[in-house]
View: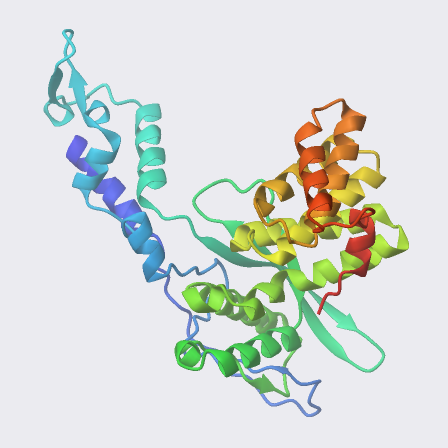
Length: 366
């Protein structure tokens, strides 16, 4: 019985990622072409109409121990307890295969499956188009794609979202090809077309193509670390949040800073200057909205990231904010006060450093 169970588990694990593409559908020419959008060029791209593809880079597979594992690896990962019964004196008992109608219950099989997935499947980032919207403006008509970024292999309680149109994808593709010519040679990007842009079938195929395009880019280590790729996801949110902060619409600004924070966290960009700016925005908005504990937590996180960077322009403003919030919350502020005084004594911070809000509003974004 155990062999049959393990066979089923092996079969389930190896089925992941095996998708059959649908044959490409031909399109009829229209009498009047619509505005230029995405060509249904499916060479190198799956044309399936459901599900999401994801790619795992070679270096991720090496770090995680490979994309799968043998049944021996599974047995070692789970230990003998789930693959054999123990005798009363604690010694391993005979294999479960010797017991027809064994005591492995449904919950034990579920636990075996859960642990095998957690130990053998590497964590990946999925890009899923969850909705589309045809937008009519005065001089143009286009499709807006809403994309969720979701961590695979676990329940993602807070997926991050972006909304992009074809021209945004095209600009990203152009910039990346200019910088990473050899890496991008195998990445397919659909060309423009002048017909059947807004049919349900075409939009569905485009959605799948964009999912695969982003997943393929994310599988290339140099590309996914590049500013061009990262800023495609969160720069719009940062710019909108900064504008809202400047105008004092803090609830709207907080939503933008929060989504930018989630995007950077999922993309592994939590060591960048943009991430520190995001933490500043979150601290300022929470403070302005009277949510002092949340503001204090974000200022603490920023100070941990800054570490010993005494010359960073955001350090003194974060210390000022941290001291003020600690005083309001009745928390210990002596360490932050001492470090701020040290910066002022050495001339790294003026006698009146700018507040975090002032620096946040003045900080230029591209």
